[in-house]
Length: 309
Image (cartoon, rainbow, N blue to C red; front, side):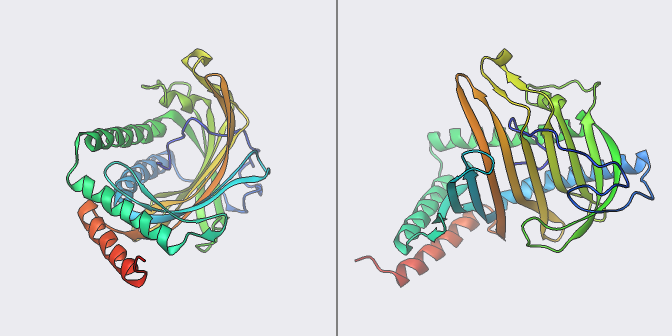
């Protein structure tokens, strides 16, 4: 998921600190010198370019994702799952590594690796069904890129100061970042129904000035979002979404955290999404042919260590 794309389950208003005040998230270091409008535009344009490069590069990186889902905010845990995600032309291949804190057995993981190898082999010699899945995934990537560009035009940007923030995942040291408020631009004309979501969203974004990268986003939905005139569904105001990115290789920033707390309705059925996912252990596996060799070697090693009975 792209860092700037605010999907149809964004959250509810949170209190903002005025420039110079100490917000709940972390201390404002200083509000001066404030960047000029030209400097803000320059930074935004370069950060968008870098985001597009990040979104392309992630397709060659595997990672570990730990997800915890609750019935409701602060309610009991219903999912506690850790998966290894390997990229493929039709979307991530998911290998379960643990559930509810318990690692999967070596035999189960060997089966997961076999599935990954078979999927990557199919990618090398796709049939009609795989080509269809690949085309759908490619369309989602194009749509995501278009939404990133639309997001850059959908908001009015207000300088909020410099802020030192701790890394929510604990994987990196604190950073001093530029902070901006994003409010819907009434002159924005959305080109798609998904881009229209931005008209309901207020957000705060933190940017690493030196590397021109988006580091953190908190998004709020101020009003209900309806689909199909409310018949197809609705996302309620009152939720909240947080995203963080961190540098995983020189000049490459990829997702480190997603946190969703939203409620809504799809047709006649209500839904709740209260989930936090931490992403770590990025490793470049390259294009599908290279990833296939990596998976094959791992499977051979594991099979040799645990021969079938």
